[in-house]
Amino acid sequence: MRRLFPVTDQTSSPSGATADREWSLDELAEAYAYPELAPGAHWLRANMVSTLDGAAQHDGRSQPISGETDMRIFGTLRALADVVIAGAETVRQEGYRPARAREAFAARRAAAGQGPAPAIAVVTASLDLDFTLPLFTSPLVPTLVLTGAGAPSDRVAEATAAGAEVVVAGEGAAVDPARAVRELAARGLRRQLTEGGPRLLGQFVAADALDELCLTISPMVTAGDAQRIAGGPSVTVPHRLVPASVLEEAGFLFTSYRRI
Image (tube, rainbow, N blue to C red):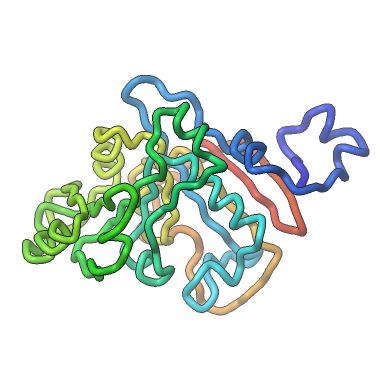
């Protein structure tokens, strides 16, 4: 892997520009560290992958357009977060399991006052989920279910009985994305990571709740009708982000953009 941006004396030199080696997990953690947060503040970053022709998935999953280093970054971003937010459809399609504790990040998490692993927060209006899965019955940190006040009461009871913490983040059945971010932060989960899917990311974008986008650009083309990384209603005025980092390996570009 090599850093392309920001440009430094090392990256702009002939040797630095062509240096390509595997980065350690510590180096990746430094590269993707959350910004210092003021008391009570929170930071929502998204991690997504896209092909060159804009597809966020192939055959309904992101794994076919990913790669080994992309997965190392995926794991690093999880290890830095207090909470991982995902939509119910993504949880079902990707077969989500509880986040695991990783020894490589234990000291870093302890120094930041974090638990052994991030919580998983599932956004769902219907609670159409299998609450017998390990994600709900045996996580290191209780899984949260973000839903609206109008969610089916029997499904709420089933989620609670399975050990999940149900968090109301909307007045009707649907979740208010901006409120969801605030509700998580109020529980001390201020370093937030969303892994999609595209519909959920689109909701965060429309609510102007997204602070950072970590986007892997995969050197593949797929055609077809797969979703792009964000879907749903468009914003009135496009939100502009500024580049914070660009890394490259084996044709993959690992970018980070932050709000102005």
